Length: 400
Image (cartoon, rainbow, N blue to C red; front, side):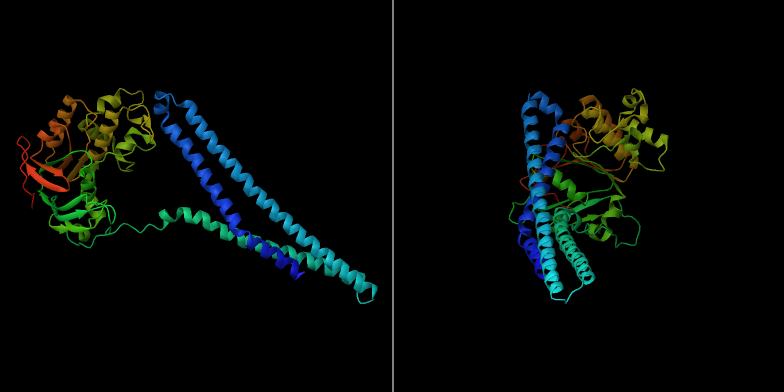
Protein backbone atom coordinates (compact mmCIF):
# COMPACT_ATOMS: atom_id res chain seq x y z
CA UNK A 1 0.00 0.00 0.00
CA UNK A 2 2.71 2.45 0.99
CA UNK A 3 4.74 1.43 -2.04
CA UNK A 4 1.92 2.29 -4.47
CA UNK A 5 1.36 5.70 -2.87
CA UNK A 6 5.10 6.41 -2.81
CA UNK A 7 5.34 5.45 -6.49
CA UNK A 8 2.57 7.88 -7.44
CA UNK A 9 4.13 10.70 -5.40
CA UNK A 10 7.53 10.00 -6.97
CA UNK A 11 6.05 10.16 -10.48
CA UNK A 12 4.31 13.49 -9.75
CA UNK A 13 7.52 14.98 -8.42
CA UNK A 14 9.56 13.53 -11.30
CA UNK A 15 7.27 15.06 -13.93
CA UNK A 16 6.64 18.31 -12.04
CA UNK A 17 9.06 20.31 -14.19
CA UNK A 18 7.33 19.14 -17.38
CA UNK A 19 3.92 19.97 -15.90
CA UNK A 20 5.15 23.37 -14.76
CA UNK A 21 6.59 24.28 -18.15
CA UNK A 22 3.34 23.23 -19.85
CA UNK A 23 1.28 25.44 -17.53
CA UNK A 24 3.70 28.34 -17.92
CA UNK A 25 3.45 28.05 -21.69
CA UNK A 26 -0.34 28.01 -21.46
CA UNK A 27 -0.41 31.16 -19.30
CA UNK A 28 2.02 32.95 -21.62
CA UNK A 29 0.24 32.18 -24.88
CA UNK A 30 -3.17 32.96 -23.36
CA UNK A 31 -1.90 36.37 -22.25
CA UNK A 32 -0.45 36.91 -25.73
CA UNK A 33 -3.80 36.07 -27.31
CA UNK A 34 -5.61 38.59 -25.10
CA UNK A 35 -2.96 41.22 -25.84
CA UNK A 36 -3.33 40.69 -29.58
CA UNK A 37 -7.09 41.15 -29.29
CA UNK A 38 -6.82 44.36 -27.25
CA UNK A 39 -4.15 45.74 -29.60
CA UNK A 40 -6.41 45.09 -32.58
CA UNK A 41 -9.38 46.79 -30.92
CA UNK A 42 -7.37 49.85 -29.89
CA UNK A 43 -5.58 50.09 -33.22
CA UNK A 44 -8.50 49.25 -35.50
CA UNK A 45 -8.22 52.59 -37.31
CA UNK A 46 -4.54 52.04 -38.09
CA UNK A 47 -5.27 48.48 -39.22
CA UNK A 48 -7.97 49.65 -41.60
CA UNK A 49 -5.92 52.51 -43.03
CA UNK A 50 -3.02 50.15 -43.77
CA UNK A 51 -5.33 47.46 -45.16
CA UNK A 52 -4.04 44.92 -42.65
CA UNK A 53 -7.32 43.26 -41.61
CA UNK A 54 -6.38 39.86 -43.03
CA UNK A 55 -2.88 39.91 -41.53
CA UNK A 56 -4.11 40.94 -38.08
CA UNK A 57 -6.86 38.32 -38.21
CA UNK A 58 -4.25 35.69 -39.05
CA UNK A 59 -2.05 36.84 -36.14
CA UNK A 60 -4.95 36.54 -33.74
CA UNK A 61 -5.99 33.13 -35.06
CA UNK A 62 -2.40 31.89 -34.74
CA UNK A 63 -2.35 33.10 -31.13
CA UNK A 64 -5.71 31.40 -30.48
CA UNK A 65 -4.37 28.18 -32.02
CA UNK A 66 -1.29 28.31 -29.78
CA UNK A 67 -3.57 28.77 -26.77
CA UNK A 68 -5.66 25.78 -27.78
CA UNK A 69 -2.60 23.59 -28.36
CA UNK A 70 -1.04 24.42 -25.00
CA UNK A 71 -4.38 23.86 -23.28
CA UNK A 72 -4.60 20.41 -24.87
CA UNK A 73 -1.06 19.63 -23.74
CA UNK A 74 -1.92 20.52 -20.14
CA UNK A 75 -5.11 18.46 -20.30
CA UNK A 76 -3.13 15.48 -21.59
CA UNK A 77 -0.77 15.71 -18.64
CA UNK A 78 -3.74 15.94 -16.26
CA UNK A 79 -5.25 12.83 -17.85
CA UNK A 80 -1.89 11.04 -17.60
CA UNK A 81 -1.58 11.78 -13.90
CA UNK A 82 -5.18 10.70 -13.30
CA UNK A 83 -4.45 7.44 -15.09
CA UNK A 84 -1.29 6.96 -13.02
CA UNK A 85 -3.26 7.55 -9.84
CA UNK A 86 -5.90 5.03 -10.88
CA UNK A 87 -3.20 2.54 -11.87
CA UNK A 88 -1.43 2.89 -8.53
CA UNK A 89 -4.71 2.63 -6.63
CA UNK A 90 -5.79 -0.42 -8.67
CA UNK A 91 -2.45 -2.16 -8.18
CA UNK A 92 -2.59 -1.47 -4.47
CA UNK A 93 -6.13 -2.83 -4.24
CA UNK A 94 -5.21 -6.01 -6.14
CA UNK A 95 -2.26 -6.53 -3.85
CA UNK A 96 -4.42 -6.08 -0.75
CA UNK A 97 -7.09 -8.46 -2.07
CA UNK A 98 -4.49 -11.09 -2.94
CA UNK A 99 -2.83 -10.80 0.45
CA UNK A 100 -6.17 -10.84 2.27
CA UNK A 101 -7.40 -13.86 0.32
CA UNK A 102 -4.16 -15.73 1.02
CA UNK A 103 -4.37 -14.94 4.72
CA UNK A 104 -8.06 -15.90 4.70
CA UNK A 105 -7.30 -19.29 3.20
CA UNK A 106 -4.78 -19.85 5.96
CA UNK A 107 -7.43 -18.93 8.52
CA UNK A 108 -5.63 -15.77 9.69
CA UNK A 109 -8.20 -13.33 8.17
CA UNK A 110 -11.99 -13.27 8.29
CA UNK A 111 -14.18 -11.85 5.55
CA UNK A 112 -15.08 -8.89 7.76
CA UNK A 113 -11.45 -8.12 8.48
CA UNK A 114 -10.65 -8.30 4.76
CA UNK A 115 -13.49 -5.92 3.89
CA UNK A 116 -12.41 -3.42 6.54
CA UNK A 117 -8.77 -3.67 5.47
CA UNK A 118 -9.64 -2.99 1.82
CA UNK A 119 -11.86 -0.03 2.77
CA UNK A 120 -9.18 1.52 4.97
CA UNK A 121 -6.58 0.94 2.27
CA UNK A 122 -8.72 2.72 -0.33
CA UNK A 123 -9.30 5.65 2.01
CA UNK A 124 -5.60 5.94 2.80
CA UNK A 125 -4.41 5.80 -0.80
CA UNK A 126 -7.04 8.26 -2.09
CA UNK A 127 -6.32 10.76 0.69
CA UNK A 128 -2.57 10.61 0.23
CA UNK A 129 -2.93 10.94 -3.56
CA UNK A 130 -5.18 13.99 -3.05
CA UNK A 131 -2.60 15.45 -0.68
CA UNK A 132 0.10 15.02 -3.31
CA UNK A 133 -2.12 16.65 -5.96
CA UNK A 134 -2.89 19.62 -3.71
CA UNK A 135 0.79 20.06 -2.94
CA UNK A 136 1.53 20.17 -6.67
CA UNK A 137 -1.30 22.69 -7.23
CA UNK A 138 0.09 24.85 -4.44
CA UNK A 139 3.46 24.86 -6.16
CA UNK A 140 1.76 25.76 -9.42
CA UNK A 141 0.27 28.87 -7.82
CA UNK A 142 3.78 30.31 -7.83
CA UNK A 143 3.49 30.66 -11.61
CA UNK A 144 0.69 33.19 -11.24
CA UNK A 145 2.47 34.88 -8.35
CA UNK A 146 5.68 35.26 -10.36
CA UNK A 147 3.78 37.05 -13.13
CA UNK A 148 2.43 39.53 -10.59
CA UNK A 149 5.69 39.90 -8.70
CA UNK A 150 6.93 42.91 -10.69
CA UNK A 151 3.79 44.81 -9.71
CA UNK A 152 3.08 43.48 -6.24
CA UNK A 153 6.69 43.63 -5.05
CA UNK A 154 7.34 47.12 -6.42
CA UNK A 155 8.50 49.18 -3.44
CA UNK A 156 6.29 52.10 -2.38
CA UNK A 157 7.12 55.49 -3.83
CA UNK A 158 10.11 56.96 -2.07
CA UNK A 159 9.73 60.19 -0.07
CA UNK A 160 5.95 60.24 -0.46
CA UNK A 161 5.27 61.17 3.19
CA UNK A 162 6.14 64.67 4.34
CA UNK A 163 8.76 65.27 7.01
CA UNK A 164 8.08 69.03 6.90
CA UNK A 165 5.75 70.22 9.66
CA UNK A 166 5.48 73.84 8.56
CA UNK A 167 3.09 75.47 6.08
CA UNK A 168 3.31 74.87 2.36
CA UNK A 169 6.32 76.64 0.85
CA UNK A 170 6.19 79.29 -1.84
CA UNK A 171 5.52 77.92 -5.35
CA UNK A 172 9.08 78.17 -6.59
CA UNK A 173 11.09 75.26 -8.02
CA UNK A 174 14.87 74.93 -8.09
CA UNK A 175 17.22 72.23 -9.39
CA UNK A 176 20.75 72.00 -8.01
CA UNK A 177 23.26 69.97 -10.04
CA UNK A 178 20.66 67.36 -10.97
CA UNK A 179 21.78 64.35 -13.03
CA UNK A 180 19.56 61.54 -14.24
CA UNK A 181 19.68 58.41 -16.35
CA UNK A 182 17.25 55.53 -16.52
CA UNK A 183 19.70 52.73 -15.70
CA UNK A 184 23.32 52.09 -14.86
CA UNK A 185 25.48 52.01 -17.96
CA UNK A 186 23.06 54.11 -20.02
CA UNK A 187 23.95 57.64 -21.14
CA UNK A 188 22.97 60.54 -18.90
CA UNK A 189 19.74 62.26 -19.94
CA UNK A 190 20.50 65.24 -17.69
CA UNK A 191 23.93 66.13 -16.36
CA UNK A 192 24.64 68.69 -13.60
CA UNK A 193 21.54 70.73 -14.44
CA UNK A 194 20.74 73.75 -12.29
CA UNK A 195 18.02 76.36 -12.70
CA UNK A 196 15.30 78.06 -10.68
CA UNK A 197 11.71 79.02 -11.40
CA UNK A 198 10.56 81.80 -9.10
CA UNK A 199 7.00 82.08 -7.72
CA UNK A 200 4.65 83.49 -10.34
CA UNK A 201 7.21 83.14 -13.14
CA UNK A 202 6.46 81.52 -16.49
CA UNK A 203 9.27 79.40 -17.93
CA UNK A 204 9.29 77.59 -21.27
CA UNK A 205 11.54 74.54 -21.67
CA UNK A 206 12.58 73.96 -25.27
CA UNK A 207 14.91 71.65 -27.13
CA UNK A 208 15.01 69.08 -29.92
CA UNK A 209 12.77 66.04 -29.73
CA UNK A 210 14.19 63.28 -27.55
CA UNK A 211 16.57 65.54 -25.64
CA UNK A 212 14.94 64.81 -22.27
CA UNK A 213 12.34 67.55 -21.78
CA UNK A 214 9.60 65.17 -20.65
CA UNK A 215 12.10 63.44 -18.36
CA UNK A 216 12.91 66.81 -16.82
CA UNK A 217 9.20 67.45 -16.24
CA UNK A 218 8.80 64.05 -14.56
CA UNK A 219 11.66 64.96 -12.26
CA UNK A 220 10.04 68.31 -11.48
CA UNK A 221 6.77 66.54 -10.63
CA UNK A 222 8.44 63.91 -8.46
CA UNK A 223 7.59 61.02 -10.79
CA UNK A 224 11.30 60.26 -11.12
CA UNK A 225 14.12 60.68 -8.62
CA UNK A 226 17.49 62.11 -9.68
CA UNK A 227 20.59 59.99 -9.17
CA UNK A 228 22.53 63.11 -8.22
CA UNK A 229 21.58 66.57 -7.04
CA UNK A 230 18.52 67.95 -5.29
CA UNK A 231 15.16 69.47 -6.19
CA UNK A 232 13.82 72.18 -3.90
CA UNK A 233 10.32 73.60 -3.60
CA UNK A 234 10.31 77.05 -2.04
CA UNK A 235 13.75 76.34 -0.58
CA UNK A 236 12.70 72.99 0.94
CA UNK A 237 14.14 69.72 -0.34
CA UNK A 238 11.43 67.77 -2.17
CA UNK A 239 12.40 64.63 -0.25
CA UNK A 240 11.71 66.45 3.02
CA UNK A 241 8.55 68.17 1.83
CA UNK A 242 7.09 64.88 0.61
CA UNK A 243 5.76 64.16 -2.84
CA UNK A 244 2.14 63.87 -1.74
CA UNK A 245 2.22 67.29 -0.12
CA UNK A 246 4.07 68.75 -3.09
CA UNK A 247 1.49 67.42 -5.53
CA UNK A 248 -1.17 69.22 -3.52
CA UNK A 249 0.49 72.36 -4.90
CA UNK A 250 0.72 71.27 -8.53
CA UNK A 251 -1.51 70.64 -11.52
CA UNK A 252 -0.21 69.19 -14.76
CA UNK A 253 -1.02 68.08 -18.28
CA UNK A 254 1.23 65.32 -19.59
CA UNK A 255 1.55 63.87 -23.08
CA UNK A 256 0.27 60.48 -21.94
CA UNK A 257 -2.68 61.64 -19.84
CA UNK A 258 -5.81 59.47 -19.98
CA UNK A 259 -9.55 59.86 -19.92
CA UNK A 260 -11.53 57.64 -17.58
CA UNK A 261 -14.84 55.92 -18.16
CA UNK A 262 -17.46 58.41 -17.05
CA UNK A 263 -18.98 61.75 -18.00
CA UNK A 264 -17.09 64.81 -19.19
CA UNK A 265 -17.86 66.54 -15.89
CA UNK A 266 -16.44 63.60 -13.95
CA UNK A 267 -13.28 63.63 -16.07
CA UNK A 268 -12.78 67.36 -15.51
CA UNK A 269 -13.23 67.06 -11.74
CA UNK A 270 -11.53 63.64 -11.71
CA UNK A 271 -14.55 62.25 -9.83
CA UNK A 272 -14.33 64.84 -7.06
CA UNK A 273 -17.32 64.18 -4.79
CA UNK A 274 -17.41 67.87 -3.77
CA UNK A 275 -17.31 69.26 -7.30
CA UNK A 276 -19.98 71.78 -8.25
CA UNK A 277 -21.27 72.45 -11.79
CA UNK A 278 -20.04 76.04 -11.56
CA UNK A 279 -16.46 74.96 -10.76
CA UNK A 280 -16.44 72.46 -13.61
CA UNK A 281 -17.87 74.98 -16.06
CA UNK A 282 -15.36 77.65 -15.03
CA UNK A 283 -12.47 75.26 -15.69
CA UNK A 284 -13.96 74.28 -19.07
CA UNK A 285 -14.42 77.92 -20.07
CA UNK A 286 -10.85 78.71 -19.10
CA UNK A 287 -9.63 75.76 -21.19
CA UNK A 288 -11.74 76.87 -24.17
CA UNK A 289 -13.84 73.71 -24.39
CA UNK A 290 -17.13 74.88 -22.86
CA UNK A 291 -18.75 75.61 -26.23
CA UNK A 292 -17.72 72.22 -27.60
CA UNK A 293 -19.22 70.47 -24.59
CA UNK A 294 -22.50 72.38 -24.79
CA UNK A 295 -22.80 71.41 -28.46
CA UNK A 296 -22.93 67.74 -27.44
CA UNK A 297 -26.40 66.20 -26.96
CA UNK A 298 -25.86 65.53 -23.25
CA UNK A 299 -23.52 68.43 -22.51
CA UNK A 300 -21.37 67.86 -19.45
CA UNK A 301 -23.10 64.51 -18.91
CA UNK A 302 -21.79 63.14 -22.23
CA UNK A 303 -19.94 59.89 -21.67
CA UNK A 304 -16.33 59.31 -22.64
CA UNK A 305 -13.98 56.39 -22.10
CA UNK A 306 -10.32 55.60 -21.77
CA UNK A 307 -9.97 55.81 -25.56
CA UNK A 308 -11.54 59.26 -25.80
CA UNK A 309 -14.76 58.26 -27.55
CA UNK A 310 -15.53 60.70 -30.38
CA UNK A 311 -13.40 63.55 -29.02
CA UNK A 312 -10.77 64.99 -31.31
CA UNK A 313 -7.14 65.31 -30.28
CA UNK A 314 -7.58 69.03 -29.61
CA UNK A 315 -10.72 68.43 -27.55
CA UNK A 316 -8.96 65.81 -25.46
CA UNK A 317 -6.06 68.19 -24.83
CA UNK A 318 -8.42 70.96 -23.72
CA UNK A 319 -10.26 68.48 -21.50
CA UNK A 320 -6.95 67.55 -19.84
CA UNK A 321 -6.18 71.25 -19.46
CA UNK A 322 -9.61 71.84 -17.89
CA UNK A 323 -8.86 69.01 -15.46
CA UNK A 324 -5.61 70.70 -14.45
CA UNK A 325 -7.21 74.15 -14.18
CA UNK A 326 -10.07 72.75 -12.10
CA UNK A 327 -7.57 72.05 -9.33
CA UNK A 328 -6.36 75.69 -9.48
CA UNK A 329 -3.01 74.95 -7.87
CA UNK A 330 -0.02 77.20 -7.35
CA UNK A 331 2.23 75.47 -9.89
CA UNK A 332 1.04 74.49 -13.37
CA UNK A 333 3.17 72.13 -15.49
CA UNK A 334 2.28 71.62 -19.16
CA UNK A 335 4.00 69.09 -21.41
CA UNK A 336 3.03 69.92 -25.00
CA UNK A 337 -0.49 70.65 -23.72
CA UNK A 338 -1.53 72.73 -26.76
CA UNK A 339 0.25 70.91 -29.59
CA UNK A 340 -3.05 69.87 -31.27
CA UNK A 341 -4.64 73.33 -31.20
CA UNK A 342 -4.75 75.96 -33.92
CA UNK A 343 -2.73 79.14 -33.45
CA UNK A 344 -5.69 81.38 -32.58
CA UNK A 345 -7.02 79.03 -29.91
CA UNK A 346 -3.52 78.43 -28.58
CA UNK A 347 -3.00 82.19 -28.22
CA UNK A 348 -6.31 82.56 -26.41
CA UNK A 349 -5.48 79.77 -23.97
CA UNK A 350 -1.99 81.09 -23.31
CA UNK A 351 -3.40 84.52 -22.49
CA UNK A 352 -5.99 83.01 -20.14
CA UNK A 353 -3.38 80.91 -18.34
CA UNK A 354 -1.00 83.86 -18.08
CA UNK A 355 -3.73 85.90 -16.38
CA UNK A 356 -3.89 83.35 -13.54
CA UNK A 357 -0.62 84.70 -12.14
CA UNK A 358 0.66 81.32 -10.98
CA UNK A 359 3.99 79.58 -11.48
CA UNK A 360 4.02 77.97 -14.93
CA UNK A 361 6.49 75.50 -16.41
CA UNK A 362 5.73 74.74 -20.05
CA UNK A 363 7.34 72.38 -22.53
CA UNK A 364 6.73 73.71 -26.02
CA UNK A 365 7.99 73.80 -29.58
CA UNK A 366 5.55 76.33 -31.05
CA UNK A 367 6.62 80.00 -31.04
CA UNK A 368 3.19 81.19 -29.86
CA UNK A 369 3.50 79.38 -26.53
CA UNK A 370 7.19 80.22 -26.10
CA UNK A 371 6.47 83.92 -26.64
CA UNK A 372 4.19 84.01 -23.57
CA UNK A 373 7.00 82.83 -21.26
CA UNK A 374 9.04 85.17 -19.10
CA UNK A 375 12.14 83.08 -19.70
CA UNK A 376 13.22 80.23 -21.95
CA UNK A 377 15.42 77.34 -20.81
CA UNK A 378 16.92 75.30 -23.61
CA UNK A 379 17.91 71.67 -23.09
CA UNK A 380 20.51 70.20 -25.41
CA UNK A 381 22.61 67.07 -24.89
CA UNK A 382 21.85 67.00 -21.17
CA UNK A 383 22.89 70.61 -20.53
CA UNK A 384 20.80 73.73 -19.94
CA UNK A 385 21.09 77.25 -21.29
CA UNK A 386 18.84 80.26 -20.76
CA UNK A 387 17.55 83.10 -22.94
CA UNK A 388 14.72 85.53 -23.28
CA UNK A 389 11.73 84.44 -25.39
CA UNK A 390 12.57 86.73 -28.31
CA UNK A 391 16.36 86.48 -28.06
CA UNK A 392 18.81 84.00 -29.48
CA UNK A 393 20.13 81.28 -27.22
CA UNK A 394 22.91 82.33 -24.88
CA UNK A 395 24.87 79.27 -23.83
CA UNK A 396 25.28 80.16 -20.18
CA UNK A 397 24.40 77.50 -17.61
CA UNK A 398 21.16 78.36 -15.89
CA UNK A 399 21.72 78.64 -12.17
CA UNK A 400 19.62 79.51 -9.23
